[in-house]
Length: 114
Length: 109
Image 1 (cartoon, rainbow over the protein chains, first blue to last red):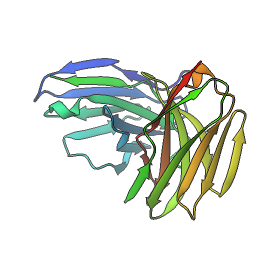
Image 2: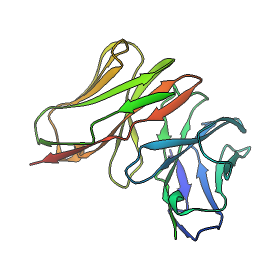
Image 3: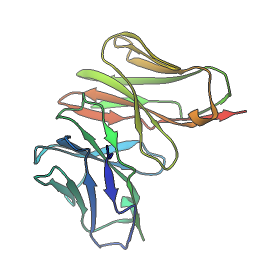
Image 4: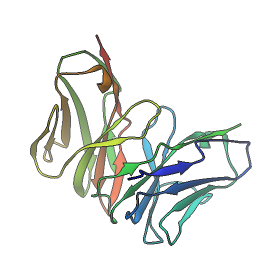
């Protein structure tokens, strides 16, 4: 069974550009979570999607947005990139909604903003 | 809101036992996870505690005391492959999940 897959593995952008990160959950999982892991910081919750809808959002500005498609894959968009957006972005999925479910993480997208 | 506190790093010898602590303050506690994250890899699930007490799973055990806002992860018979960051994650409030910064465990021969 394939795990959570994320693409691209690495992404290099410059300030002001836009970045799009993609995530495919484990087959049968309907919930997708996005986290940011900056150097020296813990995982910071960004977004939670379930059944195509945004269920919860962390304390990030509106230039961080995303969506979930009918096949439950998800996209994270970061507009007007800033240097401090450089981080590892992790996607996780779970069988159903709610954080009480064990999360299965992808290997992440390393975003570097120059 | 919530606050999660974990020591940043510890070193232990192969074969030893190590205890990784996590203290938290929150309203609306709903459960606590432990995840393991090797450098450059995704976090992987280790344990889930929602009631007080000790949950044992092979070499790994996790303990929770809700009244004290305290959990620990116990690693027995340490192996070199156990060198990793151990993340405490709190479920609180309206279905929110927050991670601590993680405790980096370095296992030496």
